Image (cartoon, rainbow, N blue to C red; front, top):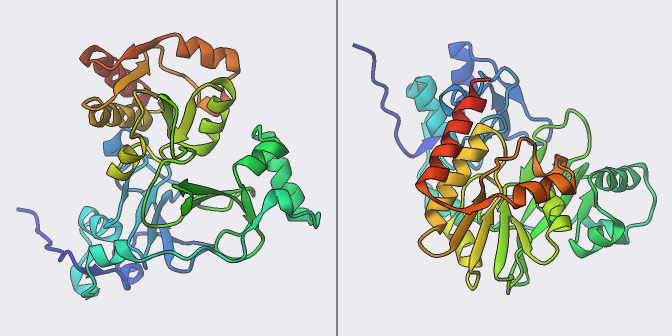
Length: 324
């Protein structure tokens, strides 16, 4: 019989590093946040991905949040889930009394060092590099201005272009994307509320939803008559569903990888009772921001109402692509 390790829910992961060392499990320190470490994700294989050998699972030892940039696994009880998965010895940990609810209710502060990229004309090496990076991703100066893209050379978001997430005129979060090679994680989000990026107070009757911001920008360039939003992940929250109030038709645009395909099926199930949900029957083979407009339109023409047959098609494709 195997040893059962019971780990309390109020685990404090202040000594997670020591426990990993004791077990001989390698980890890397984050270069941008002293409270964050990275390990090879133990969840990738069971989620249909190849074994992680690049330390893609980030664990924040202060907030408790964790996210894998390979398989997409994430949790607000990340350290606890990792401890259980790796069967680490809980005796090496101390405990805390703060509840998860209290952690979630903590408000984040807007970083003062961030500035509007379209208004900052000091022509430093980094601001020029940021504009060059965005230009290569298809963003014109007008789009940078309209989306309120931010940038900074200092602080937690340094060397990242930052997109504000706005709900009812209020910035509720930030999404930063590194513009330098080797800076991990590539995407850095503020904790707390997860809302849809690029959804106005009164969205159009047809809304296209995809996972990431650059994908949403690429699709917006093709579907000018529609609202295109980014879920900032492969799942949907109740807050995000509330943002869709007044929308009639929701088009779900999946990422081509197994996690993205399975994720959109789950999103479709949550939205189907309230909205007319459609997905492309011709499943994309490339990311939306890597496709030419003619490819996007070709996939768009294959849109079908969400059904069990379409669900099976997506699950089969996810399985097939996961075995490659």
